[in-house]
Image: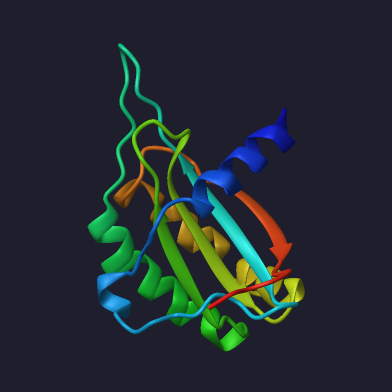
Length: 139
């Protein structure tokens, strides 16, 4: 089940356009082959009794530039923010790029709690997270 969800997410992500963060208006190339990435997704729930909320402006203009400033000393190369349609199981897909998983794990250990403490400022849902490696890129 989890593999199907991840495969569906990756397929959906590949089929949508990436939205650059306004505060980071410079182009951020995807990670290089062999780079580690952190993939974070924010669930979106829409039903008769509940609707998820996500403040994309705050996330792109405040949260991720701040996270980048914390993680850059640990080797973070950049990030991408991707939006999905309202019919997808997730609203936002974010990739953080590092040379190694260890760099990401060190950054998360140092700042993870303070980053997650700000979650209510932009999202009603707790994110899901996976680590991986860039296998191939075409630019």
